[in-house]
Length: 318
Ligand code: CUA
Image (cartoon, rainbow, N blue to C red):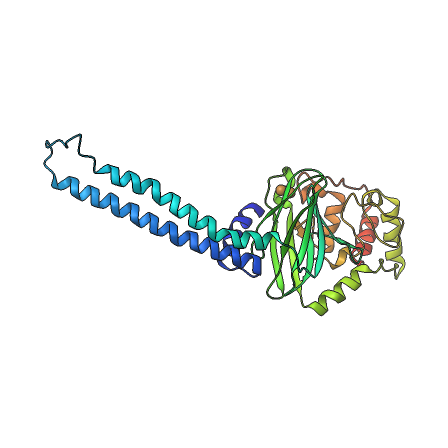
């Protein structure tokens, strides 16, 4: 589903770019489309002209083998691709150089690919989140991309081209959104069974909203405000949840799984596998593969009341 939506989203990104880098790619795509159309019409025209000329000739009138009218066509057939590819190459240099340069970026976001989710951190403020990447609209944002396991590829079609995340290496790219909005995309490199459930969302906020979001995310988790939330926190810290996840301000400090300090502020969970709603979350903690086949998260064995307390606690982490 994500695969097909990526393909469709890719077309939408090229046809309806919403950021500076995607606009450059879009102009190149349209230029190539126009050139390809002209070449296609030329080839069809030559074919039609050849067919009509043949029909005019007497069937048994054999052409003189020394007469080589095809020689001119062969020359055109060689020269035309050289000319076309040279033009496309020359006009690509500008956008390629522009998209390779992250200078002038106002913010750096580090994205680490995992099977099958995205860790998103803001090194300047210490904020760590997952799968939903907030940026200020109208600002150039530098992305540092790496992977913890296998090769992934980050692609938000409406904002920029794709870039691979490779273990042991940091790749760079930049994105910029013209306006506020949510822009979907995800992993564009087959990376295993969970690949289809490795969506990412870029949320472009106004610069003020972005600063407020960043300040909220930098705070440790709120303390449990009532008995149920306290019970939920105890379930979280006393179960296997705390071995893999971090909730800032508690003893749970692992970064093996997504950071849950502000998990309730995210719209979807499981890298877009399901909506962040209590009944879905309850199903997720007890039977993760039912929502995301192949997920590395194990289900936890809890009573119904423990699940209810745990979900209430997680949904309180705004
Ligand atoms: Cu990660 Cu496909």
